[in-house]
Every structure is written in C-alpha cells, then in structure tokens.
Image (cartoon, rainbow, N blue to C red; front, side):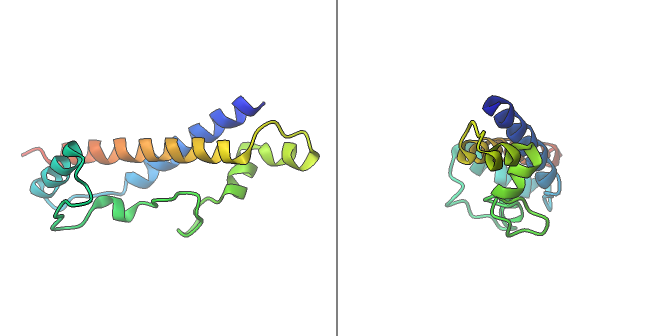
Length: 124
C-alpha cells in the first residue's frame, strides 16, 4: 500500500509542478537565453537576472500552504487516500516519504516545464 501512495504522491507532484510552471513567461528571447545560460552552468544563485528568475513565481516549497490553494502535507495525505490508513492505525509508510515523493516530482516537473518554455522563448 505504501508504494501505491508513493506513486500517487509522485503523480500528483508531477501534475502540480507542471501546472505551476506553465504560467512562467520570459519577456524576450534574451531573457530566456540569460536564464538558460545560468541554468546550464548551475550558477543560478549568482546569475544577474535583469528581469527576475522565473522560479520566483513558483512555490519553492509546494507543501507549505503559503500559496493560495496550495497543498499542505495533510491535504496531500487526503488527496492520495493515505489519511484513512493513518487514522485507522493500519498505516504502512511515513508521511514524510509521500511528501518527499510529491515535492521531488513537483520540482522535476516544474524545472522541465520552465526549461521547455525558456527554450521555446529563446528562439529568434
């Protein structure tokens, strides 16, 4: 059962991460190329983003609940159906594992989506 919950959390994280990142825009091809250069070198912290980092507009911690309609760990457990097992004592996995699966999948999907948008926007 724990593997099923983990897979559900991962799937939900992918969906939510891609959806959140789909709102990212770049002002110009130069802005997109600037971001892609920083991303490809791994120098995101020191990159001089003249128009801001697109990740500033995506929840960095998707289970914090700080964004409107944002998920929390409790909502994730309800969404994947793990709350019933936890309440009944028949709980087969730590909530942290489900949260980690969700957040890792969210981050990977958001990053892939932003990169895809940047590559399209960087075209002349």
